[in-house]
Length: 114
Length: 115
Image (cartoon, rainbow over all chains, first blue to last red; front, top):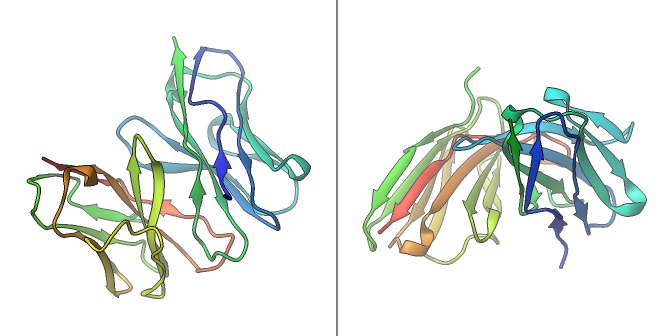
């Protein structure tokens, strides 16, 4: 079945460590890609998105993601995490020919130790 | 600019009762989505509307669930009768345009507990 996969369920890092969260999808054709963040007890907020153009996308709060079409991947990165980045991170795909709906990965919980 | 507004924020109800969740999308947006979030299943799309018309309701779990969008500024998700397994956070979201490539904005969610 077509899906969105996030490899890590829970990542624990110390402050200032570098972060990379994996995301792979299995849809063919042209897709739109998103990363959302959900802070504890809050709603989902958009971190960044890729529709076309430069495959390296910069988002808010120092996050970036790279779209690698050949690998069907859209990994999220941040060079140096902060305690305030503790949250759950969701990769989402807008598959082709499916209107505006998003299919979400299972999420990766990030815990940053001060 | 107001975001997506949902009510109630929290609801605790007894099994068998009717639950109605409400959503007001961002003004001017013409696509509306209902998602459900649980620990076991993550974020699932239940249904989405474009220009008040249901486009895809394949994610609606069963006949106990129904959703309506009587106008561009209001939608409801109803569960009748509710069951404990319906306990989840229900998110409403909206976007401008029903086609690919538009950012979806989420409300703060309705936290439902069915006991």
